[in-house]
Length: 370
Ligand SMILES: NC(=O)c1ccc[n+]([C@@H]2O[C@H](COP(=O)([O-])OP(=O)(O)OC[C@H]3O[C@@H](n4cnc5c(N)ncnc54)[C@H](OP(=O)(O)O)[C@@H]3O)[C@@H](O)[C@H]2O)c1
Image (cartoon, rainbow, N blue to C red; front, top):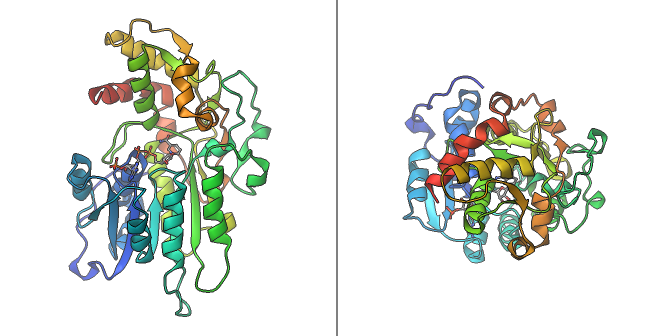
């Protein structure tokens, strides 16, 4: 990525022309990074220019929140509307008016996904030659979990999943994202005239790094730090020997901007082939117990826990999170982003700032908010 500089304001001839992009999760760690990269990275200037023809409409739970205000600074002209993922009528109505929907809110909220799909499918798609609307759904690589429950089970590279030829029939239905992703895939495969949607599924691995958008703190560390502080345990689900393919949040931004740029060029894969893993298969994976040890050391040094040693969380702590968390957080999740690599994407930031080297700075940031 070349050096960062904010794009100048768009010329007045490029003010929104009636096209709409609905964004769920725009204030989040991933969502706001996408908007930051699109508006600041010169490599995506053409994408930024194309997006200036769109009114971006962000669904946020609290339009008066600090996050919503920062979002309006990050993307001047963004329209913030109040709504949560259970406001299905609002989501369906807004999706019904949108040319593009990006959902990086909660990947497995099936109600919101169905409302988006129903809104998009209900659009008048009658005029010949018009492209069907696009739905970009941010899911996650936990779909490829081997469910080893934190045990030290070798996960050889020949068993790693790839997005090219990826087949849900080969993965347990109980894995996180399985049901929700299949809703999106089914809609992308539907071919009845007037109901077609172009779908893209984006699958980040474990995302880390200080973000540049509205939410700068790593989501996993936000969860672990809070749990460790409240239980006094630098814990993992099970023994924590499982390995996770990682990706720096800035590289998630460039990956999704590259996919969107290809959508505008008309060269992105969509439907059954529109599956994009986002991770660095060449980087050292995160080992969950090493992450827990890093968290424990920092919380202990701050006097927030008395024992810095890593231990499995007791059952009563992890049980309320349900089985899906075991698949998400305690499996080996290692995969190959063949599609992005074939398109020339390189996770430069992941290689510059490895996951364990980045952890102390990130934890300090997370702890400021606890
Ligand atoms: N971070 C990772 O390591 C990672 C890896 C793989 C997949 N993913 C998936 O990517 C998605 C985004 O992750 P993230 O790390 O960006 O999470 P995040 O920082 O927590 O952001 C979530 C966003 O969704 C919004 N949101 C959450 N619940 C909502 C609700 N009930 N109604 C309306 N908006 C709601 C939040 O908005 P407000 O709080 O402002 O209302 C926020 O903008 C998640 O589905 C996650 O499973 C994340």
